[in-house]
Amino acid sequence: MEKKYLDYEGLQELVTQIKANFAKTGAFSYKGEVATASGLPPVSGTGHAENGDVYMFTADATTTADFVEGAGAKINRYDEVVFNATEGKWEILGPVFDVANKLTFGASMPATPANGDTFLYMGSTTYTYSAVSDPTGNPQAQGWYVEDGSGGYIATTDTTVQSGTTYYIRNEQYVHGVIYVYNASGSEWVAQSSGDTMVAITTAEIDAMFE
Image (cartoon, rainbow, N blue to C red; front, top):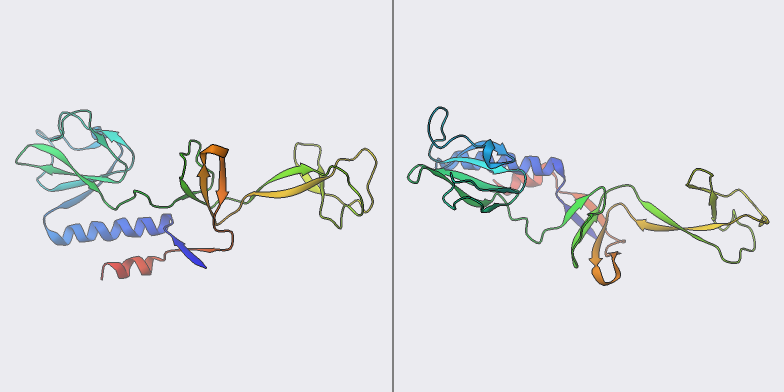
């Protein structure tokens, strides 16, 4: 089964299209991106914001007294804010696109997951190694591994079991392109889609959404 995800290139194209559509409406004027409220133009004085100016936040932030919502309100990553000339303040519009309950992805597993979190692992496949308790037969033919002397493991070339050698079975830990769901009770990520093919949404497909 083929599943699709939005990669960085696709995200950039999505933002580009949204900017263009803002411009077409005439109601808003997309100005750019900021990470904090202090990165916004002032509400008065030299270089002040104009009515309808819109900025997108690239990180979670907090409002200041220059916001309709007052100081201390949360601004979420991807939230848009618009300058309201009537109020003389910035106002939170909401997210440029809804990221709630959407599949997140990355090259490393999240450090502080919550139960039920879903994550698409896009890093290199990682492995764990477990010792063979009672080795017999041909270690090389069985695909076993041995320690390489520097904290890692290499495939053994032994064709017979060598006395004093510990052999290991390699187990997949996190596999590139697989979706995992976090199980808090077991403190583990559980694979959900090992048989699926992950394909990035193309920029052409994103462009078609706006036609």
